[in-house]
Length: 220
Length: 120
Image 1 (cartoon, each protein chain N blue to C red):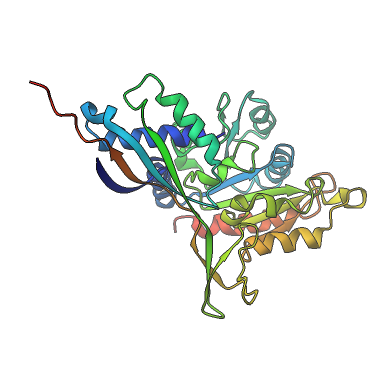
Image 2 (tube, each protein chain N blue to C red; image 1 turned 180 degrees about the horizontal axis):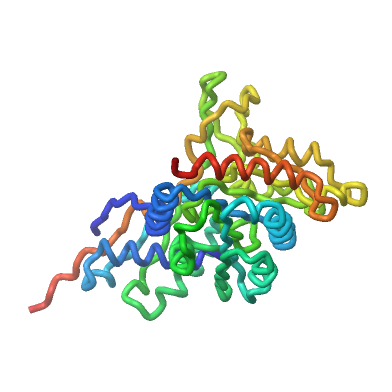
């Protein structure tokens, strides 16, 4: 019997492509978000409220990831911004090569902010770096306060937590303070926004932060 | 279900490292997987079996070493094993911690049977 010792990262190919994407974004001064969440938490609605506010002042583009259909791209394209839909046809997450390919359809010289909406899934996208600057995890109040504990990988890798659908808090059993405490137990440095796409609560604060982060990366 | 994609990456790594003619000799592929890596080992073994069936790696199996999540606490200067659902210091509760292990997702070793002696 012979043994080959190798110590190779299983996802090193993805990590390598993500590194290339990240270097490209840094060189061009593009701020890139990777939005992740369970299906139905409101990623696309947050995106719509965000685009309404920032599209006239920020050069923004969107990459939509879904298992099937271009319904999300249709919703986002109403705002007349560059939009690319990736349909994974069963794939449960986006990978760095899919993003790299999607970039061929965007004129990166005309973009300061790129928002990637990942496939709705709180497990698999955690493992796949896309080259983003910031991973934003969205959790809606209807999903329950225990989700950070059940899906720690996703909350540990994220820098920002958006707690969405806060207008529904009177009707659900979720305690928002416990939810935050659970999230901080996994990742104490999470930046938290509390939003409602129905009442617009918290959307301005989120967009202000987004604008500041985008401006700070623009080439001087 | 990303275990299928991970299994495909494992096969690629083995094929890059082991010469084509020696692939049927591979008996074991040893992996290191952290408790925070988000991988279901049973599912990974199943996927690996499916994609290696009727290939040169058909007789190979996975052996998985699980690594617990461990944090180093800057406050009390200790290293502790912890649950993936609690990544603060289990000893003193401090949030000023650094993750020491638990996110591993590596191929560590490839074992091959001894090359058969050629009969002349």
